[in-house]
Image (tube, rainbow, N blue to C red; front, side, top):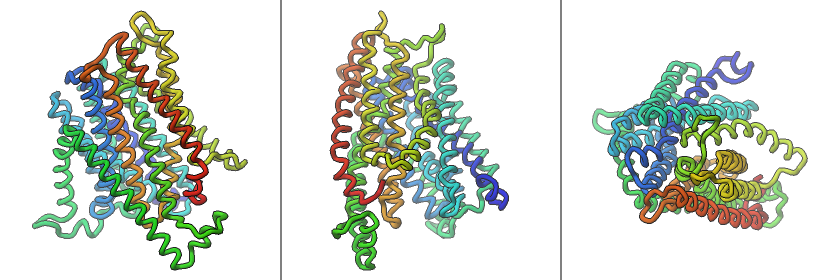
Length: 511
């Protein structure tokens, strides 16, 4: 990082990481956007089976960074981990071009492992560009977040259109080319972030591991073995569900035990009373243990929200394919392309929301975290109810107007902005510093469970035995399931709102 870069704007490496991440998201979302339709139309899977495969895949994608981050911290260093991840993701896309179910699952396995290394560590490098207390950090991450959404927007427009118009193989191939672009941008710009701490391979990685192999080589080869492991976990989705639940229980116990330990240590040092006084509390209370319980409650809430939100890639895409009139001035929008409304609305509203929270904080009107979560549930519920409200406007082919999905994604996106960035910030505030990584891993594990659950929910939109429905039957089934989700979400949102004060008490001043 040059002195000139520090004094003027952001560090040199930020733009390198911005474009690397943009193309990685182009790769990931490009494949994901087409996946359900590819399973149903090319591999002739039933709706239920396709949804469960999609759910298992995305669940593993969110679980993989937990391992990818730990391996980079201990053995690989962040630069090598990102490069390894990029190569595996590009290979995964090209393997899918084989055109069979086996090749798809092998490619998905490579994408899962590659994403675990890339996604976990490129964000870490962004953070390492800034020293503690650097006021540019939040702005830098905002710029980086824009890159993520530009990549997602391009994927859900360009890759979606190419894949559905000219053939799925061209869409997957284009996504792979995008990942190669990200790899070369990251590699060619490596000098821009070479001084960031932890970027290089640590000494432990160069130490001998097994026979002639050092730990970097051993972990790299071990990562290749995770590809077939991912293959079988996707095939045996019920076993994956059990594993995720067990992991979640274990990590919750670890969080509570860590909270108890942190309270004892602070009490021994005489620091607990001062922490309570800072929050306006006088009675002795187990602050960190309470916060861990609050975090677990909000993780469960997070699972429910994202399980419903992540219908975008499965049931909502199939709904758009079968029961949405996508004809616009004589041009029919591909069904997968309807997913682009979400990143578009994030780009439009993201900066507005960030300014809104700052202004509300200045006047003392910023809602508490539980209230924001409850409002997120309200908005996603309204989004699903839009499909029911559109029924009187269905045409003779049992298709509702395209404005149905526009408004649905509008409400889903504003709901997302009430919970997604808020949740990440909350985790960093609520966990003791010595378990910050474990807490963030737990938060990402909740996303993995949400995506797995999303697949189960989507599988309920098919007919008996998971067969695909068409016409009037499909429209009735989709709108009934979406309405049921909406009513459940409204109830949970109301419950969170009513529990606002008790949850806030457990959070001890975190807002």
